[in-house]
Image (cartoon, rainbow, N blue to C red; front, side):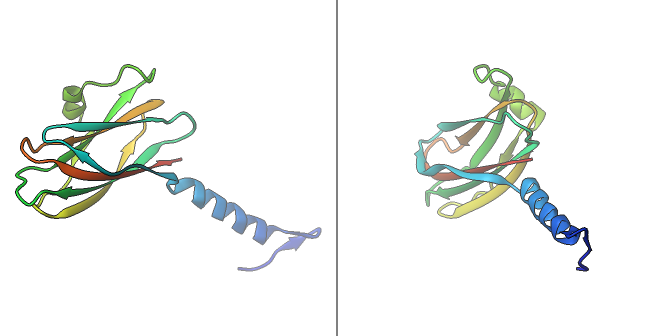
Length: 147
């Protein structure tokens, strides 16, 4: 990179620093582990509520699931929106809008998937649903807000 020094100011260094900072803003910020090897009962779910107030445009959700060797179904991760932090989308309407992802499934295996969701409201609820009606799953979940 060429150095342009004008009036004692190194504009090339300033531009590089700005690029690095901007790149940092566009990448997932504030990685937070929300669930750490939590057991979700057969047919059960766990909710993680997140305030997204600020200039965030998306959220990266990474979910790691370990299935029982006899399991017959997987896990669904839903994103429910709210404008007041109290009243969230109903699961059926969330599914109708496609605001979810199903993790791949293999009995006895551990699967991990990262998904980017758009942030359309100041509050969201990440719901991890164990679709299997007979066996528990073990779940870890991370989230990162994206500017």
